Each structure stands twice: as structure tokens, then as C-alpha cells.
Image 1 (tube, rainbow, N blue to C red):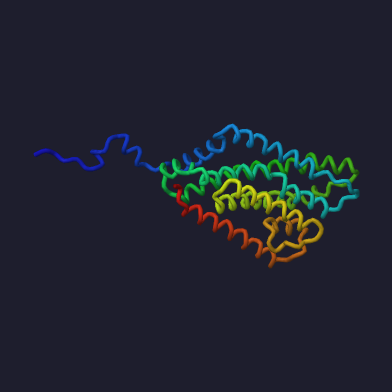
Image 2 (cartoon, one colour):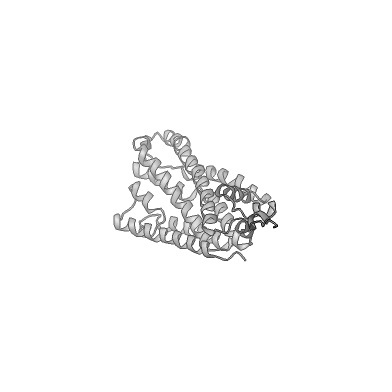
Length: 260
């Protein structure tokens, strides 16, 4: 009697290997390589942190003396809102272009779970956020401290060290979350970048003199922590529900979107 083989034993070695789903770490590594896939991507990634530093140099120049705690924290919030715009544009480009140019297909062939794919992109965003918040804190306690010394003003941020670092952490996290949420929601590179930049700049304009938009400001939690908001906990909850809802909708859309 001829012994029979199970279907697994009959598979060639290459087929058995191909049937294994790529690990989460592998997917994250693939997304990192996509981040630097073209010369334009490499240039953008080099320019983005440099732009963050240069924009910080511009935004942290304050001609007024003496400087109050509110004004110093307002400068920090403005820097958090705008200085990392190029870093976040790089994130938007990475995520939105995956669907725009159908480059998501190879990754989804290697592992078909769209949710793991979205989480891998979110992991890249966390790496970017760590870089952003580190530069924000560094610029705040080096260059901005020097600016205050030049104006013979006390560096009040050292008195509220925890608050200042908290503003940097929360504000930069919310701006990064805004960027990736828009990219997940809008699978078009130009459209997603334009939307992110428009929202970022629009809130700078409407919040310039009076707090008109605290109920829907993406970084309202950071503004309330800094004591800059004229609104209370209800506005905080409204802003969080709105933008976390946008994030949830973006993840849901990306997790169900067809790659072809």
C-alpha cells in the first residue's frame, strides 16, 4: 500500500513560506522603507526636521517685554501648531500616496489585514511624533530661553516645567494625529496635504486675537492646559469627540478600502 501525504507535506517549501503572514515588525519596516523610497522622499525627510527648527526660530522671536506666562505659553502653542507642518506633510504623503498610487497592494498581498497595515502606519507616525516633541522641547529650553534672556525677561516656563512639556507632548501628538487621520480619510496625496495645511493655518487665523473656535480646535486640550482657552470642559470634550471621531472614521475607511 502506497503511503499518502497530507496536503501540507505535498506543498513545496517556497509555497509553505509564502503562505505565512508577514509579522507586524516586518510591515513596519516596509513602511519605513517606503518613507524613503524616492529621492523626493529623502529630500523631504531631511528638510522636514530642519524646517521645524527654522520655523521655531521664527515663531519664538517675541519683541514684547516684559513677557507674561500666558504669552510665553502662547508662543509654545503656536510653535507646536505650525513648526512641524513639513514633518506632518511627509506623513500625509506617505499614507495618502499608498492608496493614490496603489502602492499598498504589495503590502496587502504579503499580509491581507488592513487593520495591521493601518497600525503599522500609525507606528511610523509615533516615531515621527517622538522626533517632533523632542525638537519642540529642545528649542523651547534652549533657543526660546535665550530669546527671553536677550529681552531681559524671566523665563517663566521653567516655573511651570511640567505644564510646558505637557503642552509640547499633547499638542504635537494631536497635530500628528490630525495629519494621519486626514491621510487615512482622503486617499489622494494633493487633497490630503491641502486639507491638512488648510486646517492648520485656518485655526491660526481664527484664534489670532480671540478664542472663536475652541469648540472645534484640534489642539484645544493643549490650549486649555496652557491656560489660553476661553472655554471650559464642555468645549474640551466637544473638540476631543470631534477629532477622535475623525480619526476613528479615517481608520475605518482605510481598513475597508480596496487597494485596486
